[in-house]
Image (cartoon, rainbow, N blue to C red):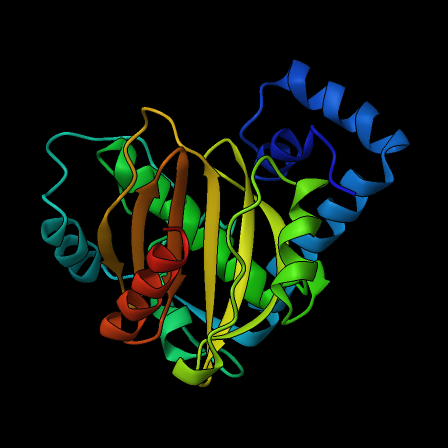
Length: 251
């Protein structure tokens, strides 16, 4: 069962809290088994990446090319870290898909707008689910099992429809945290690809309608008071086909 402090625990793990807040979280971890387990999962994810990937320092030339591609360094912006690491590195690893390695290259890429920050959080959550054994909390292809499960665990209960004729197979759901939201996540498999569909109550905050980060596509839409975002490394037209099916199911 998730704890309300899970988001601050993740910030603590990433070293983003002030010393006073860190002490509070450390005391909390002593008594909260769920958050202690979360710390273990995050550490396992980091250890798995470090064991499977060889690290090479990026050359000044490579760093310059990356920074030039995102608009240069003349106006520094807040940094977003992916996969909870603190290095700018080029990785070549065994056991990870090339797209996942490429996505990890974004660890210190600057993100200038709130939509980019949300995209970074979505991609981080997607990648974390693939390597931390936290892809599914409830495993089922039955929407009458998955959708009601969200009612007691997340802030929303999004549609959880199986689309076998289109090869978008519902495999279950989980709860995750994205940009301060406790999101319900409906998980699909399409061929060899995992598609995470995040959903949370809609608000005034802008979400990226369609963006791509190193082979990972993010497509977001709003239906009524529900904000949804699908994330995957499947082909962009295949991801959009699922979003259209889901929009139709939402009426």
